[in-house]
Image (cartoon, rainbow, N blue to C red):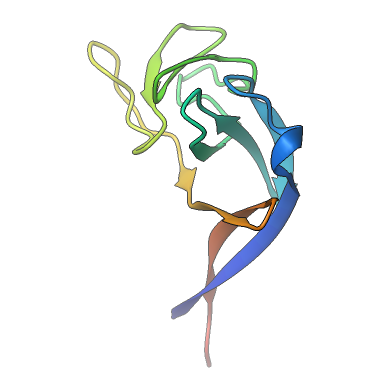
Length: 113
């Protein structure tokens, strides 16, 4: 099994407001994209790692941390790791800029027979 990196254009830079999450679809995934106050972009799967789940796009961003809107879990946007005393991980995806277009990369498994 190999993997292929697939890039998805998800919108122009100006459509992502600082510290406000935006829901986008890339492939078959719903992602939450965040632009931090320092201009960095982060993409996470729009699903809380909390056992009861829930969306993350409505969370509060402070620095490079996201506070889950339903459970107030603190999640590192760089690694997807939930901070102690809670635990869990949310999937993160690389974000790049192509001029003024925001792109997200997904790894897809390719099965060869």
